[in-house]
Length: 134
Image (cartoon, rainbow, N blue to C red; front, side):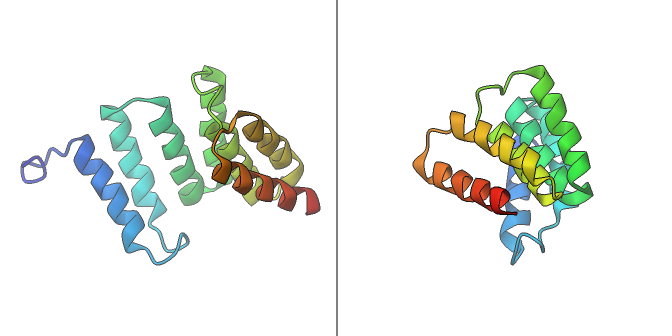
């Protein structure tokens, strides 16, 4: 197999990312540094903007919100995800976690303009409310 040969492919990397998530009892217990590194490897095989957005989340958890926001800013400049609600939602979450609730609220509002899924809409509305009441 690819793992035995020391050459994992995208599916093995995705499985390793999933394993990191499933072995952690909580989000705080998750090995975000490993996940960020794994996403860095996955980008080599699957250089999509969505994979890079996922990496930004992991980097934001592992290295701090500013590091994650820098990656999100790059994705925003590229424009490929301009109609994807999870781009402003990710930006909003990183801003919220850094205490920048006014900016986070604006990003949540943008995400709400784009979201189509009702469950995600309710989640984003709740987070927006939290930012407005902070």
